[in-house]
Image 1 (tube, rainbow, N blue to C red):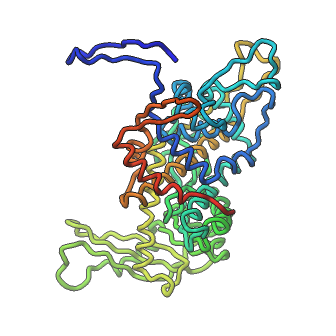
Image 2: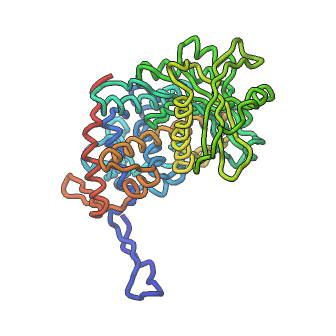
Length: 488
């Protein structure tokens, strides 16, 4: 704790004085709520049981689960740079939120006495872990087994939330939205490439979203020059098995125009997984559409119209004919009609053309969730292949090999996705409690990033927040009890 310090007086009103005092003030009060969400879902214990920690137990200051909580909570609160951990090391609320210890002990530090061994008295953490410590965590999480655990944790989080709020039952149906998106980088990170479509140096990951729920179910980092559909078959099929085992009874797939390829379509049909996709226009499809590009007879209505035409179509590289739907659109003040094509494995009896169009248009909701990941969390992937040349001011006796920075960046992306799912869970609770729609940005500004004062009375800590924030917290906490996870 520092000393009281007068910083300055304002020029416009000399009665206003700015001071710094040794009080436990915070702007991160929502970290307590997010930690409680994690605990009620049992996510911390689930991760701790599965993640490998190869560190020497005698030299550990911060348990791995505390490092993981620190990374996820900082990302969810909006602190995307690991350097931010250094600036927030003494924040009392964050220290309480990430710690395994009970009471107010996470706020206490006690240096080890001379001659005292680690076994006799383990050192107590001094604040949050530092940026170098979090970087070493990212390196450990980059191992294949740990990345698999983080990937499974995305679906586990969604599954536990759904079951907790549905009395232990899975969803009946879930639509799996699969897409690719760019993450721009500034540097020459391994795997990043200039992509002509996005006019930037990027990574080009795949992402899968539960359309009706809003949760991220899986992400996979890919090089920046990867084509949209590269690796999609290996990404989608195993995920479908996991989704139908954990989250729902029947899953369908919705994909954009870059994904429909024979191997993927045939695999989904063999698995009897329904799908709908947009397909790119080509000369053959243009000829098929031409006879239908006429307006219906009669005076045009005030509002633009959309109508559909059913057909069967076989592309050159397809093994058989498949059902396609031509969607024709009028647009205001435009003479020519617009059109595009949908491809599906649903029969007309199962889903007619109008219902199919509505199903595809709902894809915009998933794109909105992905947009929130990019705009609100804004993942920062910056790891580069740089072997350590100095350690604690000295050259290491044995030169360490550079970690695979591509997989470190994938681990960082998975942490961002976990932070998104955690914040999304809080958002769902707020929507249920208030009956209003909540964006992640609004949730962060009004519920998570709020000011508070931490008061210590004996062995108890009290977090004091403003009445306006308390009203929203009361609404959120009224729903938090629904998250008690009691099953597998």
